[in-house]
Structure formats: structure tokens, C-alpha cells
Image (cartoon, rainbow, N blue to C red; front, side):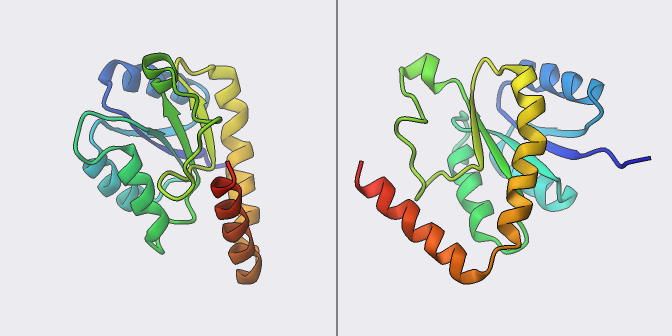
Length: 156
């Protein structure tokens, strides 16, 4: 029997957490949730998940932006893929895909709320596989990718 993928879901909306946890569990995932960014970081360190689903804007001081940045700078966490999830498109009229900020917020994938659950089910394994391939890349290619992303973001 194949082991189920472990997901940590961090979002300050407890109704959303319950709904997504139930949906993901019914689809065979092992799910851990937290409604606070700092506690979410502690949970990620404890569980070492296969992937993190992360709300971008949370009410706490330690938001999804900070959590993502912290994960990307810690050697034990930077390999864990992140799918950023946000309702900022609906709430603020901001399209993350149009205005990405790779320097400050660098998820492996991004979904707008309300989340298309079928798209999410496809995106989870795709994102994990993409992260595994990236992890195997030589350091010089990683450096080149970072420089390319920096140039791309500065030319917009």
C-alpha cells in the first residue's frame, strides 16, 4: 500500500480549514491544519510534510508571506513545495499571476479562492514532482534560475 501524502494547511479561516481538511482527507491525504502562521511554521517543522497549502494574507502578524519566506531560507524546509492560496483577487482586485513577487513570496504554485478543488487535486502531485526535480538540480542551475527570475521580475 502506498503511503498517503502528508499536507500541512495553514489558513486563518477556520471554516475553510475544516472544509479543505475534510475534502483532502476524503481524497486520501493525511492533513494537518493550523490557523496561525507561527504555529503553522512549528507544525511544518514537526510534521515535515510533502507539501504545504498556505494562505497568503492572514490576520496574524506572521502571515503567509512571512511563513513562505522563512521556509525558503531554512535548509530543513526550503525543499518543501508550497501552494499559495489567496482570496486577494476577490477582495482587493489583485491578480497574483500578473504581479508576482518572487523576492518576497515564492510559492511553487498559486490558486485563487474559492479554490477549484479538482484543479487542486491535480496541482498537488504536479507541484510535488516539480519540486523533486528542482531539488535534484545542480547548484549552478539553481543560481541561474534565481538570476533569471530576478531579471524577469525587474523587467516588468
